[in-house]
Amino acid sequence: MDANIVVLAGDGIGPEVTAEAQKILDVVAEKFAHRFHFDPQLMGGRAIDEVGNSLPDETVAACNAADAILLGAVGGPKWDNPNAADRPERGLLAIRKALHLFANVRPVKLHPQLIGASTLKPEVLEGVDLVVIRELTGGIYFGPRKEAGEEAAEAFDTMLYTRPEIERVVRLAAETAMGRSKRLASVDKANVLASSRLWRRVATETLGDYPDLEVEHVLVDAMSMHLIRRPATFDVIVAPNLFGDILTDEASMLAGSMGMLPSASLGDLMNQQQLPLGLYEPIHGSAPDIAGQGVANPLAAILSTAMLLRYSLGLETEAAAVESAVDAVLEEGVRTPDIKDTGTEVVPTQVMGDLVAEKLQTADAD
Ligand code: IPM
Ligand code: MG
Image (cartoon, rainbow, N blue to C red; front, side, top):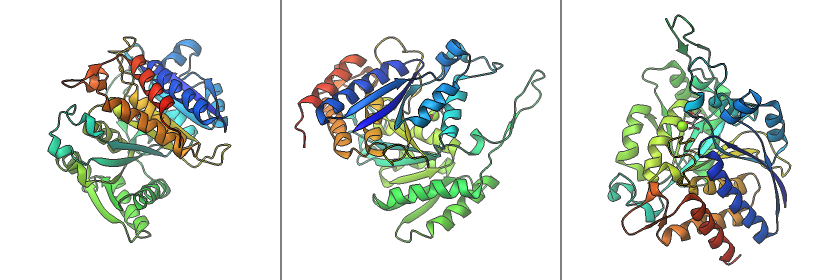
């Protein structure tokens, strides 16, 4: 297969981890006889510095024409001025919107080798394997707002949802749950928020089409507790934008480290392969505190390439091979600092990437 992949390396540790992810895609291409063409484009803080815009038009055009997009991370203290006209995060939100990426799929799977790396007790973590589907182009991230301005007297953001926005993401979550263990938890704050009451109503109606699903509606505050109290009881969780953002950072600790969690943002646009045009990124941010030191964990970015291969290129065997290579490296006790544990060997970002590449190269192709 010939595929065109736009790479938005971004800021902070973004370039370090995407370099390792590309290394893995190169190995996949060679081993399985594909041709992946990488098209690096600007987004985020570096784009502001270089061309004065966190999301240049050229980047949007390239993404639209691509089969898939690989993203590192955006943001950093350099661009944190609250009065700045543009911010790195604006670029990320704008590309999500431009590409209709209304669903952010964040699998949280505990690699058993990392059970000791989490701050949570092993007996709580046993069997954790869930997927959070976060609504990504609506809600309070995109509703009407007022900045505080010069007087700094008042500011507001609005959590606005429409029926179709809720329905399409709940449907995607329901389909996902049907392909897994048929359990779905829908998150809202229906006891207080009008937008959440609509969310619950539309979710309930939509899920009426899926009588085989076991459904629970969970208030977001309660969910934040249940996630660390009984994480293994959840299968698919669907949540509004802001709630999903918060819950997935919390859920990342179930996998030992944020450095382990990949994500796929999907929508209704199709690529040249007639598969969903998706954007793939680790859920961790730009981590400016460790940027440039070569200590970032590239596994979330590498696991994001597995999702890219699976969803946007339809290459399931290749995706599974990448995941197995990651497993094999963890099995050998190799770790980056964020997941280190007694008796393990700590290696830098590039070495971790090399080791996964080597495992992938030498594994039997099936
Ligand atoms: C995420 C991040 C982003 C978000 C930031 C960087 C804008 O936290 O992808 O989870 O809030 O969506
Ligand atoms: Mg977040």
